Image (spheres, helix red, strand yellow):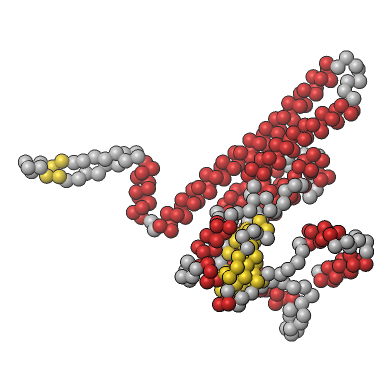
Length: 346
């Protein structure tokens, strides 16, 4: 692409000279964008382009890792075939030798997959948790390797979290971070694939209450939706295999659910509706709720930041460990009372 600009210059002899400029395509594109768009529009285009490129890189990285694992299984199958031919004994390899060989192969594949997921993070961690929750559908080596993944594998630095809060909530108000938060814990309560949560205390201006601050990871929507698309393609390859779970259907359903998790304003509205349902009977009269639910702080909610009531407690997934820590027997009276109360609240 050649960009030609004619500039009229008059010499002493009144002659006209035309100047021609050859501008590289990228420079021309940048010039056009600079002249025809606002800063916010340019920033959005830039982040979208980066996200698309990252999606391609992540898809290629994960696909190559999967291809490497599949190739190793094909190679192992060929190796076993020739080993069985080479064995002079008519019975070939023993059952124990065959099982040991495949256990070693599964261990290699599981280790490769685990390291790839640990490096890439994102929705691949969530996928690992889903797959590991059904150990009957995969070799034990994979179940063991994937069971180590939790929602706290990749916490963001607190500086990044504060930057998102300032951009989403404070800049438009003309407020500083200390104007809103009297205290803000730097260590997160939890760090999941979509967002990270911190405990904080609001200033007197905002009610001086304990809150949980949920902050969406920067540019995470494009990243996670790309991850789900990649996983669907991989799951589609194995859809014809004899597996007890159709992971293609699972990831397709998760893809639809995930689309609703990036709008925290909608989540705050859902929290309000749930609270109203639990505290209102069929006739519209107020009643005590069987469970405690958090409410958002209306003045401190945006699409990517949600400030809500902080409720002290133990995650249900860790209830068993907490009871063991307190010396409560799993079949004891206290455990049974907890189970009945939980079921009643549902």
